[in-house]
Length: 472
Image 1: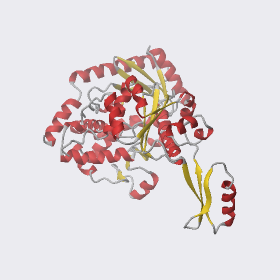
Image 2: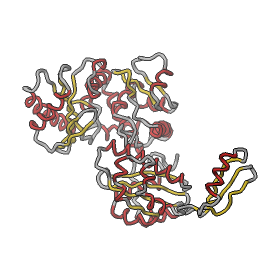
Image 3: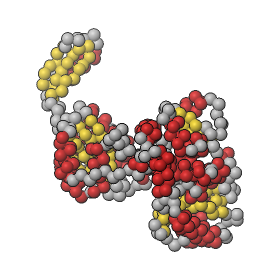
Image 4: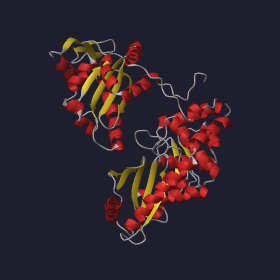
């Protein structure tokens, strides 16, 4: 298929239908009307607006997220924000979830839509911000001034593309492209295709400054340690791409080049990974010649961004823990459904290591350190050989290990103070008393009980990006 043919087919599926647009507008109007009437006596000059991709008409088909902002006059206080939310709960009868960013906001579901109610302050520009979310209406205003209908469709293509290659979403779990970042990139490059063409030559530290606020980009690179720096047009102290990590930056650059070379709808609508049976998964595990160790704990009851921050911190700490005990890690990952389970995956080069380990001591030219080394090991019950002096003039000793099996090391150390102090997230540590350790095929029962984890682990084993075709 030609690029234009692929894009034409993609936009047909990404652009909301007339009925979808009417349904969204009806839902938005109903909520705004209820809130406007219910809040009219709360505070003078209060305003209720729809924000986000719906307000900018850059949302994509089947998106069911609505952002409603309640704008208070700038002279209002933060206490008023909380009072607004209390009033909202009385105005709209729903099953509310209270979320927290810089300050609280509300979330509820209605007719399959997820609706967020966010209070903020009405400000004229970023110099007068009283909270981080005050920028959002300013973002909407800026984007709407710059957008044409063609550019809006190009934003949809970019959102569809980043979703398809798995790099859409600024939340910590993903570390990818936000909706606002997609909009700014389309504005900056005047379209989707030109963006992809330019992105193929991006390098880490690429700067995009649409409004030309900065003359010296090296200053920006010192200010923002980020693979991509996109200056927020309405707040020059902010990098809109700050959430984008190096891995997803690299995936986008590679996928852009691959799409231009071999355009395909798979970049927008990836095929599902072929289902593997538990037996097939165990067979693939065995064929690798490595060994898998799984640490399973209950999922801590914390918000998603906090949870994923703890998971990434903990998987790195456990990697260090294994390598400190001479178990090299071939690959690692972590999965959670965010509700019930967390599963850490460690693929080990070896599940057992020799009983004996060599410790290299100081050279004979450091007699003070040598004396301490000799004293420590000469009568130790753990010493198997030595101490002696090797060909390099250093003291050497061979001692026995405490653990030679990776699963025993983890199982025995799981409640040990040492393991608690290696850098695990505090919420992860709290769940360790309920931890279970599985080795290799022992995971079969959990794969059968947890289909979402089975899908995740299948992708772990297959690994090839779905947009990278066999003909690449």
